[in-house]
Image 1 (cartoon, helix red, strand yellow):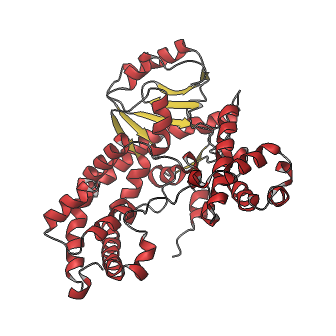
Image 2 (cartoon, one colour):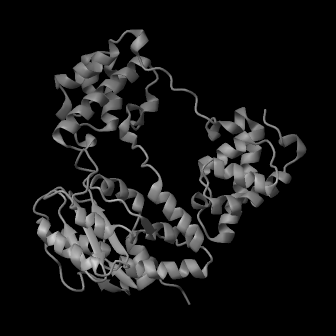
Image 3 (tube, one colour):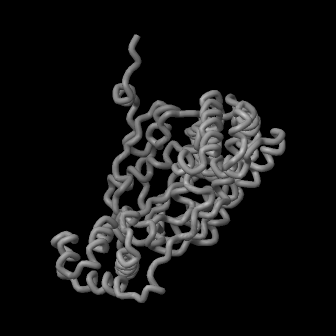
Length: 412
């Protein structure tokens, strides 16, 4: 019998199109939030489902523009964080209990800006990854665990808009409506699969790790910047990036809404040839705007000593170069990557969750041969692997290294 396609399977699911108890009004008064906190505080052992809506595609910052909370006792709260500062009573109510989020790394930084930091965490996306689920978006996980079809629209909306449309609020409420139920199903599956401790370590790592810098935090993160070969072209791009960042911060706009990366790079490439060539590289709406030309020329005209310098060589060297420049490291890499891939299939865990690829490459680069599994485990942990990752991958790395021909066991 032919299995139904994902689309057919989804069509057969019960659709969850509105909160079961009705849509609650947005909390924009601190007294209302305190009332929710009092209700939640009556059952301090309950986990709390948490989500936050941002407007990163529209605004300069990644702040939260709507905060969604839900406990079994207190129900759902939709909180407008623009209306007031989060009260100490909310922090007290949420402290000590487990927070349930989906893809927590996306929301934890903006929650921290509100003074909200979890003491314990359960990430339903990470749990789904550790369980080897093929699709780990919230809608897919809800469908898999609860047999419900969840509305998916409005995820990329401008949540800084006021007032928020009711359809958006329904979507936001549904994001936490069944999250604790999903958590319970996934927790049981993790226990059955013997992966509960793996998940605990992953959740704690996610909870405590500092946020990664965004690509837009530095001019070298411009898409296509590698095509700028001349230091003066790079200086033009750097100056235009700085002008864009200044405008975006001042007007609270997402930088790409001021001028796109590809437009900066294209114009910077032509800036050394003069104003006419520079203008031709820009879209019509940006041509003849002196501020971009002045910014670009301020970079082009810098003294040589102030031009961008070549960045320090990366360590280890990019693995794409290994096959030609470091063939013995490349041989080790191919063998050990294959071993990790095979292990990931056996354990039903994605390779990137089993052992971070950059960490694996660094270990391979630094080790021409493997010692005992216990030694390798310690080395992996020193590089940042979680204990469970090091424990399960170290024996596989040792075995794969032992299979390499003797002449391939040393780095050139």
